[in-house]
Length: 356
Ligand SMILES: *Cc1c(COP(=O)(O)O)cnc(C)c1O
Image 1 (spheres, rainbow, N blue to C red):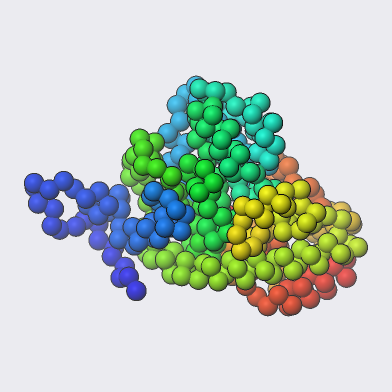
Image 2 (cartoon, rainbow, N blue to C red):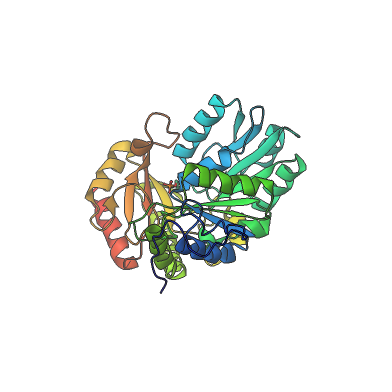
């Protein structure tokens, strides 16, 4: 097991030596973060990975590389907080943003501005309807216009998806979620397909902003990642079982899960994801908002809270969390499936739905 090395500086850099930027001064690197980065780069099939103090910090490092006058394509139905943060950043710095449905290649092609579009920001899958874009198709379109493709694959995890092999330039993870997986750490990771000037800028921004993942946190992340595959596989199996069951319930009007044959991108999901369809699902209630709120309050194993990707199962009325700018249906509950006994989780939902 790696030791935790909190030292701020390192001995052994003679005056003739160039500083080793990964260990020279603690704002630019630490041993545990370096180990987590090496492990993630291998999982992603990436040229390199950089760990950050949050997924949001990784996003800021990418945004900081944009210039006034650039154009950015952003998934319209993606993670709401990033939609707000990115839109505000771009408005302030004179960067044009087009919100598009990345599952619609014609819409993406129409929104691209060749020579001006620097970046397309997709999610695999989108949150909270879990729609699945065609990463290889997107990469072709975006590269054709001279831009780069970033995929936020937080929900897919590197266990189920490797976007770089499909053509993505950057893969972002909120390591707060599945990578750590124990609900006790905020962290981010960004991986790149190749080492280029943009990547150097991203590392420079991390050092300048001081958003590296610190040693204790990186150590926790390494510990969490030891069980990543086991957790994701178990939770995905349970999610498929619950989604399949929910789709048969009269109190449920719609189930959103890429593993269901009725999902609009089921075939694409099966082709791009390996070993499962992920552990996030959402469902809508025939009884509307009131029924949704009621069920969320009555489950006992599913705890009512936001966030995802941890060992414990969570239920959330997503519209309430997202607030005024939410595009989420009001009758929708979002489930993050944990690693509890699948039968217990099903019984828990069944009891709450029966009472509703
Ligand atoms: C949570 C989340 C983020 C933000 O990451 P933080 O670690 O909270 O900064 C980004 N994308 C997705 C899909 C998320 O779920």
